[in-house]
Figure 1 (cartoon, rainbow, N blue to C red):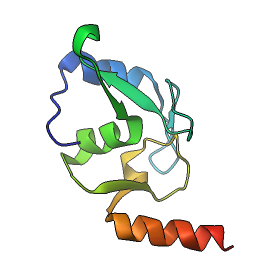
Figure 2 (tube, helix red, strand yellow; figure 1 turned 120 degrees about the horizontal axis):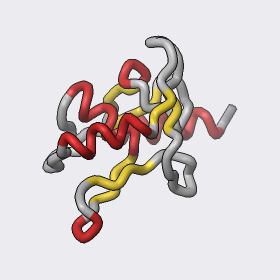
Figure 3 (tube, rainbow, N blue to C red; figure 1 turned 60 degrees about the vertical axis):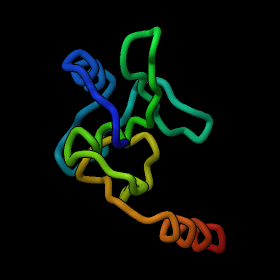
Figure 4 (spheres, rainbow, N blue to C red; figure 1 turned 180 degrees about the horizontal axis):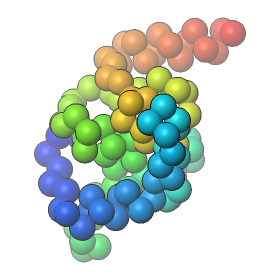
Amino acid sequence: MTDVNLSKTDIERFWTFVDRKGPDDCWLWTGGGNPKRYGHFSIGPRAITITALAHRVSYFLAYGATDLQVLHHCDVPRCVNPAHLLLAHKKLIVSIAKRKQSQ
């Protein structure tokens, strides 16, 4: 997420879809999701809505904009706890995925 402007309303609405627990626990996204089980969040008014992956919105709110991929350290696709999210280049993500497939 780079050139997205979240309004105060967007930010407040985002957190209503998060089941926050302890700081080390997964914070599960309770809103909508895509077929790969990642959460998605609609930003802006209905006429000009942008849909973003919920974990990327969470990362953006906690740390700022990035062009890199946002990876789940916990391996839970619906987790949006910023402490569980880290940045990775596409090459690293492909390498991790291949390693998981071979296990």
